[in-house]
Image (tube, rainbow, N blue to C red; front, top):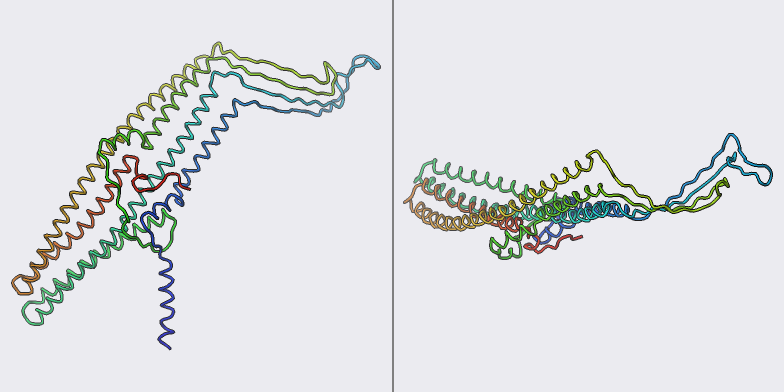
Length: 432
């Protein structure tokens, strides 16, 4: 009974710890990133800001109706005429109000071009969401794969510790039999400590990857990960991905829209050379009967610029320079997109080659270790030979784990460089 009471709190803590652990698959991590990540949510809110700006500019071409009025107390009252024929032109207590309608008719098409720029601004906000989603997907996928790889590294280091423990047990047996010196035992103990140190480093790497996942996915507590259920789709050719990157990558789309905005700005500034025409209509009601106590009017007003002291010329010149900058930015962005794909392809080929060589290295190191250990157990090899084969096998296992991560991350970066990461991982854009 006493033992049960002592163990009960410990079991409760273990149960609570297990409940705090979040089991997360690769697809679940990516889907959650699209719904809870603050960076993505902030980028989506920019769409609402751009939509509001578009409505604001649309209001510039719509009619406006205003009402003005006044109540006035004058110090004197002035009347012309006498008796019934008298007309009060300045009453002591006066009031008036008027309702005015104003409708822009023509303003050099400046409002239309500003509205078109605002529509492109909405498109840019949507592109910003795509860019933010791609960046977060790449970061979450990289962190998830790093956590999976860290689990593999931890398992590798544990296996290395087992090998080192096996060598230590054999060295102790030989030492107790008087067939080797204490140096062999100490060498084996050193190998175990080195493996334990590397195990601690692998655990630290895992915690770093999991910490990034917790931040991006708004989670708390321990996260358990598993290898992705499915692999990435086969890569198209490099030329196909380059064509996609230069035609549909978010930053390329953004640069193209910015060029169109700059072109519209040139046209908008030229519009200041053209006249503006406005229709105004109104109704006036006042206490003073002179000239009439109520009447309405309509007016077609226009303004023709004749001399503006070079202001419009300067505006157009500045807009043209901005247009030239936008053209250069588009060319630079397209060039960057092409080279990003080429670099990502080269990195992927290098990582795939490194992984293949690491697997060959591990197979050779495993065969070497098995043979050397048998020779050592038969006292036909020294402890130095065994230690060297152990180190070679441990390094080969670490190389396989590291190159596997490099290959997986390089594949993700190829899809990211082409602007097709969501398609590759099977995640739709703009998920709410």
